[in-house]
Amino acid sequence: MTAAEPDVVAGGFHLSDRSTAEIDEQESYLVPLTESVRRLLDAVIRTGAGPAEAVAARATIDAITAGLNESAPPGPAGVHYNTEGRSWQWGNAAVGPRNAVAPPLRVRTDPDGVTRGEADLGVAYEGPPNHVHGGVLALLVDHVLGVTASSGRRPTMTGTLTLRYRRPTKLGPVRLEGRIVRQEGVKMFVAAEVLDDEGVTVAAEGIWIVPRWARSRTSSGSERP
Amino acid sequence: MTAAEPDVVAGGFHLSDRSTAEIDEQESYLVPLTESVRRLLDAVIRTGAGPAEAVAARATIDAITAGLNESAPPGPAGVHYNTEGRSWQWGNAAVGPRNAVAPPLRVRTDPDGVTRGEADLGVAYEGPPNHVHGGVLALLVDHVLGVTASSGRRPTMTGTLTLRYRRPTKLGPVRLEGRIVRQEGVKMFVAAEVLDDEGVTVAAEGIWIVPRWARSRTSSGSERP
Image (cartoon, rainbow over all chains, first blue to last red; front, side, top):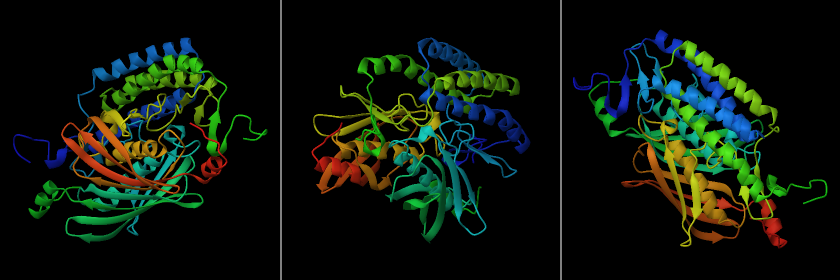
């Protein structure tokens, strides 16, 4: 971190001076708004509304958007953390709690070392009729493997990802499990599975790599969440 | 197709009696509504709105959603086609023109045999700070390779997909190119690249498989779009 970039560390991660209480407070009303937008986009996919209703809905939505944008800083949401150990990535395409594109995927690493993910995939995640888009499963797998490789200790980036689709995955709840297979220097070898209530639907393996900027920070003894 | 399922073919694809003109008309007002929802979800990610504005926006959005749902049939949007050769998959997670989760990806297969895709990836597709989520690129690659393998002639499903991430992809416009490498029986070997304005960011290859129900239809001489 340099004096010229008071709140930025290498890689674009931001150290914020906002407290955890402040972040929690903001999420308490913006996360429910996001959930409403998820239900809205679901309805827009399925509705049989006519032109009058659609045009009126659009005008109302555009007015809300204009209002929300008045207080919006430019650019993406980014990845932030504070000195209390809280981190937030509101716009993340897989897990972002303020991003209606994200299902959202919920991920945790359990004491047994397994990284587990859960998501409920509604009609917005369809590919083949009544089934989850294979690419959406790739998105979820990629994210779970990234968390697996990073293990909450250091950033890693996807190097190689291989997915084997054993059978179609029905829309609805899915689970994911990720494990570290082995480590070779800056390369983390990881594996994951997607499961529905009848078992494994997708098996995946990948190599995640510690980016150069994080290697130099690690070698200098500095660590971040 | 059986008498018991008058508008359904194997695999969940629906033959519709709706005309192309009717579908185009419905898209003329529901696609712009979807675009408004995309701008809304972008604003929800970035806004600094306070609780009063968020709660009011939520109530208004919930009312719109309730109205749209009154005319919405249950279940996902599915994949439909009519006897004029028009097909539509409004809810598809990658290309659905009525799905605000989709960027949307635009895909075409050119006379040179190359399947080309384009998408403009805004803040809702972020993973690493300022960069596209690797899993979103996997979603786009999976879809482009699926179109490549099907070549507009028959359905195929993802078998195996391998992605090599050469460097991070900045948020913004991306292009994709997919090619058939070779065919072995019901297996289509395909390859694709993701490109930004500085060149290739992801290289991918995969094996797509003609599903069993489509094989039997093909062997009986029946073909669908």
